[in-house]
Image 1 (spheres, each protein chain N blue to C red):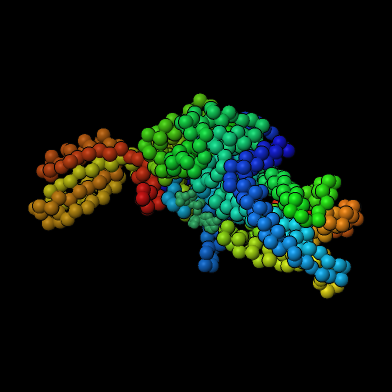
Image 2 (spheres, each protein chain N blue to C red; image 1 turned 180 degrees about the vertical axis):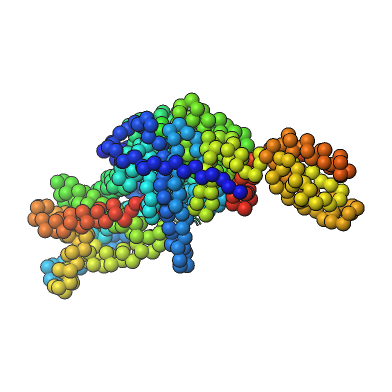
Length: 250
Length: 345
Ligand SMILES: Nc1ncnc2c1ncn2[C@@H]1O[C@H](COP(=O)(O)OP(=O)(O)OP(=O)(O)O)[C@@H](O)[C@H]1O
Ligand SMILES: [Mg+2]
């Protein structure tokens, strides 16, 4: 346990010494919010009513961007660990890949939560119809789950590929459908019925639905039990897969 | 030519339960019938390690000497638990790395041939982090002082020179004050001064602190100078294993006599002299009276007697010996004899 915490502290230190924190927590949310203000008059009409693009994206695409942004930077880092031999140097010591995974995930989950908070509070200040207070806490917690799921995906990708370049390419293919089908960009209600059931099984879809329910409609978090269960199932599965795929062995 | 294979191979000790300390009497390293087969790029397989057996006693300084691709790194990394053997048995202080890997990792220190580190942690932060994984550890400041990197303690690894990175790797291998230290070509790329100071450090660790050291090297003089015993490895096999002195002794002789003559003489005449075991000659003073000198290299078993006999013979035969030199035997001779290859590149 202490080894994991030590590693987590080391990776937090490294994170704050890199420029990434500045980009992911300040530059990128700022850019995204300006974009949303420009499109603030766009609306989606579905059978369940109208929703503004600003509200939809702040509670969908923005979170996915946080998750994938973290995942991307993280993938570059761990793919480099694998290809250069940092992972091998760690493997010399009595530390397991699972400990390394947990340690690298902790600071990123925290950063993802903070970034999600920045997004939502900023969006609210710019006129989005978002509830703050307890709802914000729930959303920030859900953001952590989204981010950690994204990091696990990155670990699996890094485990399946041999070089940072390969990892990057594979990640590109994984990312695109996520934006299209998870409801991040437009309401899942716009899909045909059968497709709505299918996309409900994608890791992020349920969490995005829960975020919207809590932040936009004021529903309680427990109302999204099935969605959260699916997300938790994915998280567990991905963690096991990541632990198996991402290790040094020859 | 015959070099005795030192084949002391009792049954490997049965793997024992978790212990943090070394048991007296158990060998530091036991390797038996180790084989590692790699797929060859483009088809086929490569027996990178081809049936290696050896033992390293506690407190011993053991050297692996072999050319590029001989299988040194592969053997070492199997012992360290980083690679899986195709077949064979390994014990480190009686512990089986395949069954109790973490226990083995606590007992050993490893310097990898090529190692990378976290890019945004300083040297002292990294050593503190690594040390925190072990129950027994050395303070970072002491480790850095040991390898002469105190001034760089706040630097990142990428800010170090190649030789300094090498030394940092050695420091990182010592964080847990290991019982057995594995070093994969630790002095390659070091300047002569640093090489000597690293040799001093390794000797101190071995003699004063009783650490077992297993080291691979390309440098024959390094193996000869440091190691109690040397294994000469080539094509994944151990060609010979013994103390440098005995290895040199088992060669045709203990040394060489070299000289040149203005005209060619019959190798057989020299071969009949006492104490001379083999004659090689080059140069073309073939016809009697030719001006081109021929040079001779005689392997000798008893240099004193051989030199005396040679001088008597040259007086009697009226042959002028130019540039007569007696060269003591070296590990390089053994290596060349066994592998037919020059090690230096
Ligand atoms: N992961 C691998 N996959 C395939 N072949 C490998 C692998 N690692 C090593 N080899 C091959 O196995 C042989 C032994 O390699 P090894 O690295 O053990 O040699 P070495 O004695 O350490 O050489 P050097 O002195 O150059 O470090 C080489 O022919 C090498 O090409
Ligand atoms: Mg090697």
